[in-house]
Length: 75
Image (cartoon, rainbow, N blue to C red; front, side, top):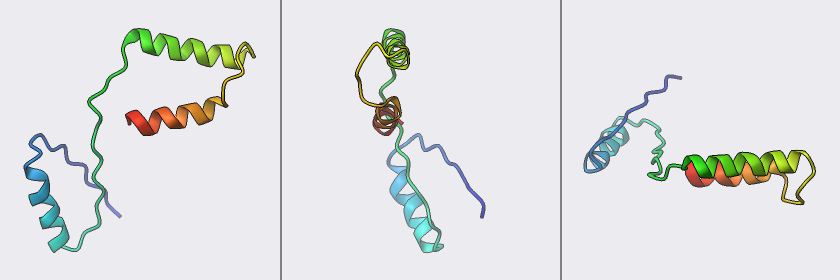
């Protein structure tokens, strides 16, 4: 199997490209990037929360569960 990654700058090109891939009978996945970017303060706060959890200072959900939620929302 070979993977091809294409960065599409113009959203109007996506339907055309999808049609071409469909006509060739190729399987593909469209991954739309989020425009949201964490600020330095948000990253610092997330890392502090993680460290507090690791040190047992908080009763938060399991960090892996939180991390999965963040990854699915912003990746």
